Amino acid sequence: MARVPRARPLLLLLAMLLLATVPPAAAADAEMPSEMRETLLRSAVRIRYEREENGSLITGHGTAFGVDVSQYGYGGRRFLLTAAHNVLDDSRRPYGTLKVEIEEGTRSYWSRSRVVVWDDNLDLCLVEAGDDMPRLLRLASADPQIGSRLVMAGSPRGVPVKLFAGTLDRKFARGTVRSSASVPFDHGDSGGPMVDAANGKVIGVAVAGLPKDGDLDHNIGLFVPAVGVAS
Image (tube, rainbow, N blue to C red; front, side, top):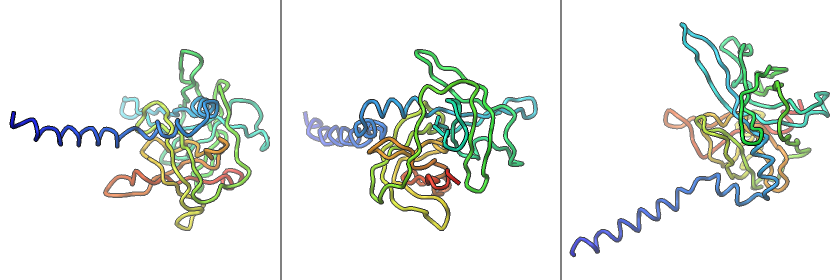
């Protein structure tokens, strides 16, 4: 009987920790209308390269998203934006084998894709898939205000694409054409869309995290804003 009172605080602490670690994706889902959430989840995909090394197949992955870029002369439903480092090898040339994962109804498949154009300095790339994308996002015409609510779609560590809630912290941070957001960020999220939670339009492309303790600061994501995409 004497052990029961001592166990209760421990159980309460464990319950509090579980509540505190609710996945950020749930918070992002709660903040978005269902149609906007559906469009974002069906337009953002995993992207991977494949290469051979010493007889073994090596793969790497990131995130990409279908986007309407008809205003720039690329019509149709097969174009995606992603981070250039997701598709370029050590010589800064596109990998020979590149695929994006497309969901169609109850099935998903990897569609062979090709790099159309890239900018190594901005770390941006336009990719054309071998099949139509289920949904396309639209680019915003202007940046939101500092403190605006954002949502990032990403594939951290290779898991299926999820949504993460954040806020815009700084525009053109650290002297580069990159803005920063307070948002959960991990390896694999690069190339994902950063959208304005108010209207679902793309304000930028996630490209990097900030180094910390030999890894990343998982609370900050850097993205190239819409002006960079336009350039």
